[in-house]
Image (cartoon, rainbow, N blue to C red; front, side, top):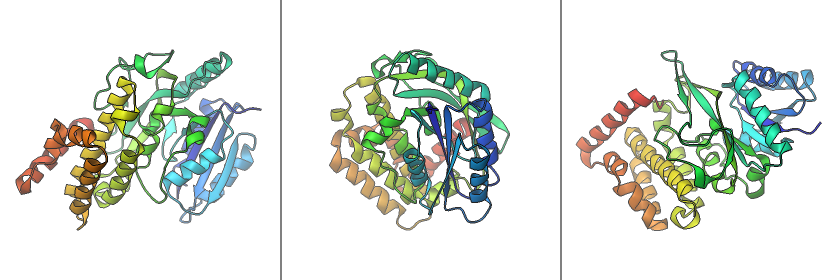
Length: 344
């Protein structure tokens, strides 16, 4: 049977989490055989992840593939899932997250409907939910009043995204060919590649469809998580690498002609520069501030207009206050914002 969608599940020592993830997809899809799950074992060695992947594939051979590779990091696992995908669409689900059954049924129904109508949708967008482990609270990120609901639209038909409404990987389900035809530059052994995945392919997407359903459930708050504040500060070199790759992907004001899409992408990149600045100041790495200065200089040399937008705007000035007092103010402003938005 032709596969309408492939769910890629990158797994690295994920034995404690992956069953819930796989089960949520199977149950939400009602075990139909026009879906596919590709479990990518990214060189796991500390637990039973490789065996679990094989067990799932043996149990549902017409739906699930197990792929084993040497450890290459999250981005490499995402791309391995993509290269093994048979589905018309591709969605990444991290092994410690899961999908809501009713929302998944709605998404699959809409995909089948639009494909039958030859609507040529490039990107389906759904909501995601932060499941905060620390205080057992939830925060839904939706796109109401920004994107038209339930219809096919173009970027020139969208509204303005606020600062909490970024289109993260959790929200996106791309047509597989959109990702394959021009590739996605995800570096190996690097965290935070989801920012590239959720940003670089957007201009290739001409026709989108948004479903106002809370599909993706994203755990946040564990101490070992890549978005934990201390972890991000220690890995600031990787955040800088990701941001530099995004920077060199476009001259946004020249390359992105649709004003609404350009506005969104500029604002997303502005936040990436702010994150690099704040976490460089939080980092104990001796080279953190030097590398940050190089990043700002690279942006200045590559795209002067973007440098002015990022550095001289309100967020840029607030995150680049000079001296020790300025550093303290910047970190204080970040932590105040974190209390309300719960970034980490």
